[in-house]
Image (cartoon, rainbow, N blue to C red):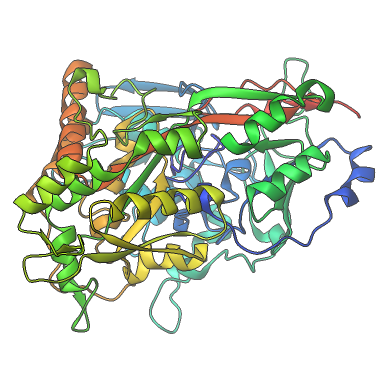
Length: 593
């Protein structure tokens, strides 16, 4: 799962919290077959998403699913293996702390208005760099200890210069990867405040906005949205890309995303040929594998998914309006390193892979994807927590916990150790992990209350109220370059969920503390971005992984294999775990049935 604001054209997920893997909302009421007659005349592709989009505002979105992959591009893009390629910029020149991008000729927005250098200046200076707008994008662009932002300068009608105040290794990937936004449609919202004194931008382009008001620059534009049913996109007639014969791309004129509440429903729709592709899990792999030839589809296996799946504790010691965010008794447990390590040793992760993933996955020990050159493997020094409940008990006893005559764990003050684990409701994977986690914790005397909750409620707890104890969730892993996760690891980041600070517009928190190891990871992420020597960069990010595995802000569980079933009529797929099935959508075709 890629949940990065960087490179929205990689159709995966957002860098902040990503729970689409485990999410589900309401039962869909749509009928996919109603589009079949249209499909005979209009090349289209039908897939599914597990929940409704929460906003049409790219800058404010922190969750998946979202609509932005099809409708936005940046100056550059990534291919399916993470290599940089031209996009809105036809070329670029990079020299030390300076990059000059040259825009393509004749770029236009989906409403036919010219896309110019002024749009780029607006996007960065007035939106991404605007401290009144809470966005994780700003975090990954901050440079050095000063946390300064790049400077932009218009050179002429097609060239724009980016300069960094200090060396910044991911400069090109970061500056080139974020979406460019339309000044003519959004300028007023960043200069006008509402009655409460907040920028109108903070409420602009919600899901109640008419689709034709959402101006895009990518291969598609938003055509319609019916809550709980579907999102549809139509080919952007002003998109810049053409094939070698001069034909407009993408070839597929319409995309339809059915909003399907769970994987079983999506699987059923795929098997009845109402969906053209579906991401599949371990439970459905063996079933579909036997149907490949007869069903006229192919299952693509990209290897380990780039996402990070974990269990984490809320370590925020702060209070709001005199009320602690976390019960102080439980907060002491969650902030005890030995407690978190004991929990890690007590999770039978191999059993999860065998029983839940049916062997179609690998153990995970780092938030950095193993396909990244910065990944540190256990063989090269990364600490692992092999299943060892006896070791877990020893750590707990050494930290002052004790057992009563019922073998229940108590803290030093005699409080029964019991906490709640939340996940997004409606997923068999989430339910299975929660159930086993509860069993594993019971073996070391800890009582867990597993609480699947509505996806929207969960997102609010993680990003707004901060009212939670433990969570089963997932993130993107940050992509190829670890700096893509800078917002996740910086103590001052816009999304640092295990110890979140308030973002713009949120009530203040009193008493929040940043642990020394937490600050050190943040410092190393700054240092890693400044270091231009690749060998030294790898060593820096290796250190961040070692610290994270020692102090365990997140307990990593496993990495499922990236599996997607795609109908044979969908031609030109170049599948990869990093990019998925549709990273090259512009050149994919659908054959007539």
